[in-house]
Image (tube, rainbow over all chains, first blue to last red; front, side, top):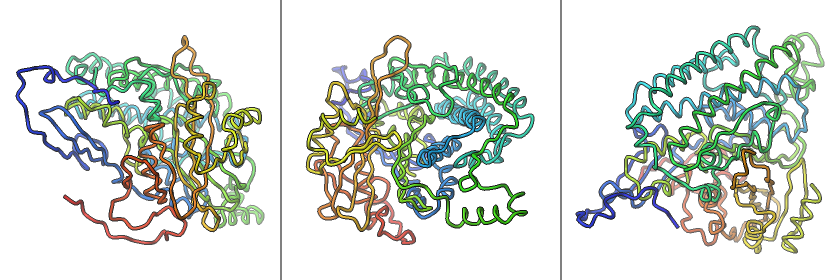
Amino acid sequence: MVEPARKNSNDTDPGRLPTDRQVLNMGPSHPATHGTVKFMVELDGETIVKMDVAVGYLHRAFEKECESGTYYQAIPYTDRLNYNSAILSNLAYCIAVEKLLQLELPRRCQWVRVLASELSRMGDHLTRLGAACLELGAMTPFLYGIEAREINWDLQEILCGARVTSNYIRIGGLQSDVRPGFEDLCDESIDRIQQLLVDFDRIITANRIFVDRFRNTGILSKERCVAFGITGPLLRAAGVPYDLRKAEPYLVYDELDFDVPIGSSGDNYDRFLVVQEELEQSIRMIRQCLEVMRKTSGEPVNVADPHIRWPGKDHVYGRMEELIQLFKGVTEGIKVPAGEVYAAIESPNGELGFYIVSDGSGKPYKVRCRPPSFVNTQPLAEMLLGGMLADIIPTFDMVNMIGGECDR
Amino acid sequence: MDEYLERVRAVLGDAVIDSHAYLGDATVLVERERVLEALRTLRDHTELRFNMLMDLTAVDYLGQEPRFEVVYHLASVEVELHGTEPSRLRHRLRVKTRVPEDPCTLDSAVELWPAADWMEREAWDLYGVRFNGHPDLRRILLYEEFEGHPLRKDYPKERRQPLVGPRN
């Protein structure tokens, strides 16, 4: 069943000396893995013959906490799922609740949400690419990637006041509209990021050492990817053009012009290239969003229903009716009709879905997060079997397991 | 949507107890004893071809009988590429089955999708649903010494347990 990722040249060498097997523990905190995860590797020389991956070191009872608070109180927790792209976690949760509420969102809200999503996706992708280089010992490209991410995070800070834990998307709208002049600022910053991406590409993508460590390592065929439930860049690098933004468009993705890059071999190098191209596509989408946002400036970004999106403080402090609505909203939570729903978005790691069961009260009965990191980490052992110990690093980097999302 | 649900019901036959389509999500409730058979039929059916197990989780309906519900989210993803067009054939289905508190067991779906391995371990860890035929049913997010299953509704949120160091 298990196909070795790469045949070690030693295997076929008749003059090879037999070695004792040794077990190596890597993690849970290891400088070359940006996440708390433990690998128990059985080695024959440097070849991996057996591997077990232990996750769960960052478990913080996300689902249990969600059940004990109101629908609104769960949003900050979603920030802490995938902390590299917090806005997308907010979005996935809010979209699921909105599906239960059967809300129709204002047009401008949808465009700003797409812009925020793509900014967030870029932040995640830049971290993934930069960190992958760093962990292979290439410091310079990491710094280019991180400089681009800093510019991106500055934009997110202007958008919502926080660099990492954004808490930006609300049920039925947004925390706030973008500030005046954001469009021009964003345009400028995106230009700088694009230039940095060109530099990044020229430094690393064709580098001989880099290519040698990425190409033909960590291979997983598309059939196995599908069997393992893998989605996102990993699946696309194996050659399956499955992207929720195209396959089941949400928000206004069906009105945007963008391509879905795919790979062919399903190795780490293809994954790297797919992620790189997705950055370019995100930039394309952001530019289209900015154009629409310039035209729709001043339009509402929240639904008008005060039972779902609370009235602003200027109303609350002046009028009785609004004060009551806010009080009831905060203490009892918004009333969501009973039922169950599953909604998913395309996160940087793949399908991020929320399965929510409501009993009609102000608190969710059950909140299940379908974490792409958890699902994608599972076949890590299969990707690496037969490979070398050193292959763990690039493979783990491209799988991009985010502890917060994987362990919840 | 109703037409689609009818087709699924016809394929599964009398294993289906109930079905509904709410807010665009098609759902079928199948008998516990026949869940593996139903899932296999859905996976291997030439037209439906649910080749991906997207998600597996459990829900605790404390006070109801049977108490637990195990929920599978299936998806059909087109693997082969046709020109430059992105995948078009795709549909989803939610399959549910009820599991009593005692015996809290269900057949494992690992032989159908390897994706079920970790997901079933998680359902065992957090809800205490035991999957028969699972190759390695250990806790995954919590540690082995942890007592109880924390996502059950009768597990108090405030309960604290000692952290146990790794065994060597």
